[in-house]
Length: 433
Image (tube, rainbow, N blue to C red):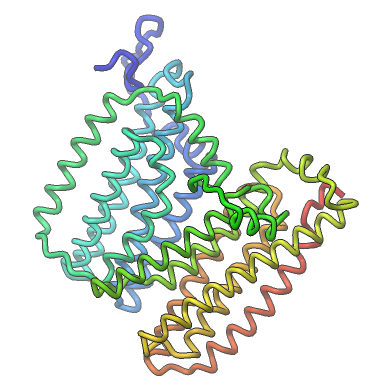
């Protein structure tokens, strides 16, 4: 065993009690009071709850998609907590903390996978179980790779597209081989956890992840990106160049994935994914604002405004510009896609565009009201509702449903979003006034 392995105890200086230790002691405090793990676990819980709707509607794909996202969220939370422990130099001074963390993570994962397996076995066919086993293998592999390359954790956000990617595909590998593959990956993960060591980069990754919402983008320069950054200022001040870079990367990723759809005849939901990622990007504006609250003093001292009221007005205008970019992009991409996808009607394009605007405006408006990071996390529940509203609307209208219902619903939600956005202006930096 490695000399500095986190699973080793500090030895001679501590007397090891022979009495049984409760490995779940302090579990709530450890997992639920850390903003990173709490965000992932809340996502996992909500995805699992919404997946149970598939039992009522008898739609296996919904269960496979949402429960797969729940599994991915649990593994992302596990990787986050392991990385947190690796970045804490004093962790070896606390007996059994890392070992207890692993036991707790194993318990959460086993309960979730067992529940998904039981539901698939009882209510659906083996193809759904095969999808869940594939997602489990990917989650286990992600945790193992993050042990080797801690910075890989920043790719956790892209794991959530995997359940959607496998949603319409058939898994030709048998259940037994998939289960065996998971056991092999699990064995390799256990071997890696036994030898895991303190990492000098882990603390920086943990801090950066907490500030940027467990998301990271490469540092790309360029005059045109600087122009986008200036156009969005001061809404993008706390994210820096990451906001403009993220917007550009999302558009590039959309083009690449849609091209792959046409070349390989995939059924990847590119528009729905782009819509969700745009809303997440808007939510990150206020996540970083709250996490980097000390940077407010620097923003306030910039010679671009004459006081707090003018700064707030400029920030709201920056958010309006961000909404304009998001709305124009989703409208343009959906209109272009309708050229080679005749099923994508004008009503569908309007529905997709309006639902994206509504979701983005809601997270920006609610984000302005947030003073604590847990409040920002709760505001991001809008993403789940918007995703369901968008997908259900497109499906119902493509099946010949009442189009007027969805159009009226979009108008009502648009008014609500605008009201909340306006209310957010009055609440932004209220404690600074």
